[in-house]
Length: 284
Ligand code: PLP
Image (cartoon, rainbow, N blue to C red):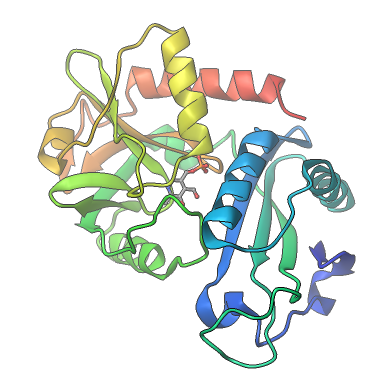
C-alpha cells in the first residue's frame, strides 16, 4: 500500500513519524474515516466539517483545505485501487522535541497521515445476521463529541464483548445508553418510533447518523432524539447502529435479550438500503 505522511506518498513500510509525536505519547490527535464505494468517497464534506470542528475544539493548528484533502484522498484511492473500503485520516498536534505535557510552540507543524483499507462494506455478514451487543459503563472522557484517537476504552470493551461471545459494546452513562464502541445506537419502539440519543458532549456527532435521520424523515418515520435505557432497548421492536464503515447495522440481541424475532428488523434493513443508495449516488 501507498500511504500519505506530511506531504509525501510513500510505501507503508517506509512511512515514519517521530516517536515524540503527540499522537503517540498523548493521544493528542483527531481522525476521520471516510468510506469508499465504487472508488468514490461517501459524504466527504460531512467528514471535513467535523474534522475542522475537532481540530478547533482542541486548538490544533491545522488549516483545513477541503480541496487539497479531497485530492489526497482521491490519489490514495487511485494508487491503491480501492473500489470499496475506507480512507483513514489522522492529524496530530505534531512532534515536539521531547516528551512534554505542555503543547509545543505554535510553529511545530501538525502531523498528517492518511492510509486506505480495501474491504467489503455493502456485503456484510454481520449486517445480514445482526449484531449481539453487551453493555458496559461508559468510562470515556466527557468530550466524546471530539473525534480523538483516545480509543483505548472503546477497544477494551470491544474485546470484552468478544470474550462474551458478542459483536460489540454499547456504553451506559448515568443509566442511559450513550453510543456503541465505534457507532451511534438506535432503537425502534413498538409503535415504530426511531429513538437515538440527542447530540451533546456525550456522543460523537455521527456523519452517518445525520444522513440516516434525513432518510428517516424522507420516509416519514417518527424520530425522537432522546436517551434510552438498556431495559427499554431490550423490549424494543428493533435496534441498530450507524457508522461510516458499517452504514446501518441491525442489532438482534442486547445483554442476552433477543430483540424482535432475533433477526434484522424491517426498518433497519430499509434504512440500510436507502442510506446506501442515496449516499452512493451522491459520492464524489
Ligand atoms: N460514535 C463513535 C464513538 C464512533 O467512533 C463513530 C465512528 O467512528 C461513530 C459514533 C459513528 O460516526 P460516523 O457515522 O461519522 O462514522
